[in-house]
Amino acid sequence: MRQFSSFVCVVAFFLGCAPQSSYKGGVGAFKEYEGYKEWKKRGYTANYANQSFSDYKASFEGGNIPTDLFNKDSSMMVGMRESAAIQRATMRPYKIAGKWYYPSRVDIGDIFDGIASWYGPNFHDKKTSNGEIYNMHAHTAASKTLPMNTIVKVQNKENGKITIVRINDRGPFVDGRIIDLSNVAAHDIDMVDKGTAQVRLEVIGFGGMVAQNYEKKFQKDLQKSSSQLSNEFKVGASEEVFEGGDFALQVGVFKKEGGAKEIQERYSEDLKNSPNYKAEIQKDGDFYRVFVRGFKSEDEASDFGINKGLEHPIIIRE
Image (cartoon, rainbow, N blue to C red; front, side):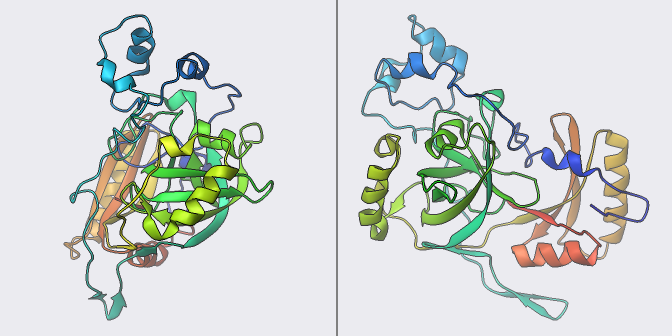
């Protein structure tokens, strides 16, 4: 990925994830659900969210986790973060340097084709980009630009198997990959051993709910899936369209903080006459990522990256 003439970032570094996420993107080759058999044999469908796996393991032996958290009628959606602050309202078109931009829009029924990967035990019990706790046994996934809490049907184009997931993380930062599935979702579509799969995504709901006009298809999908998806997903009031949001462009990733600071300073100098944009460093595990923030649409961020010579602009919706 080309930055300025004297700064080249190693492609392998882009195996990381979005700001404030411990997830590094599509890493995992575990054939078993660690701890899952012990959990499931007791008939629980409760959410791990916002509790540590060690606490849950202890609760099997009389720990101090509230007992109602393990009610068989409870849902893995209990820990979902959804608020007006997270899901931004629709924005009007705007103009920059003579060009009109429009809020990045996602509609119920939108289709996306690409490569899926998955992540599992190494990231279980760690924070996702939106502040939730990653649970590899729940049907969630990471996407770079789909709004948080979007509900997506995922079909493995190689074998026809399907699953349904909720977006609660950002990633994968690997060219060509459009989604990273949780461990259980990857098992649903039989892609764990291979690691990646050609998939088709279909948006079927927002705000953590399957859209009501998708209900008939949803019931058919439940019959085709090998998982008990009805324990996690419900049909209800869902927006038909999601517009707007804030976007960030990753312009560099470094193992040493000094390199990140230097590229940040160069972008900051370049942006001193563009008060709407800001170059910032985000610590992400062992890496230092540099983002330019302040874009109101994916197209605006993409144009900025291309104008700066970035061959493959990596954009996230914040």
